[in-house]
Image (cartoon, rainbow over all chains, first blue to last red):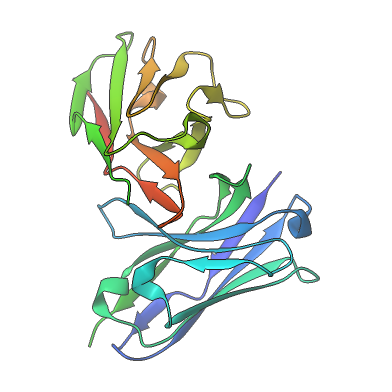
Length: 118
Length: 109
């Protein structure tokens, strides 16, 4: 069974940093692209970032470019999101998701809440 | 940038009824890159349909995806109590890579 366990969320002041982690099990982590998707509580979904299997291809939504860095450690079966210069509009529930057929997300972690507020 | 608009915003139906949810794209999209997700309160989304009409693993056949070009539909043939949730369509393109519709809330009448 695919499991994605997300951690690292919390309350942080604007301008500060936070690092999210996603621990994977139940599948060959090194064979799949991975994603971060966020959701403002009670609102819709927004894709944040993608990293390819070997980390040679990385993409971000425009609103986080230059501030967020996605990375992965295939040996540890772990995905990370380093979030710098956080803004109030970054507040939300952050999910990690397993990529499927390049265009979709077929397994999701439970999400971790990030709150950016002074 | 392709914008996905879902309608209606809220759909109120009874168990056993048929649900029809719409997703309209601002420009023609490649069918193979259109998906539908279900999200229940306090849970992560679940992939239902990919490639516009292919059911994901374990998804019951009462869920059917259809459409092409700019108009896509998710049909739930006979609503079960566990089907009441929020549904999102999603598209894969070039920039941004992945976009979601704003969601349709399917509630019990």
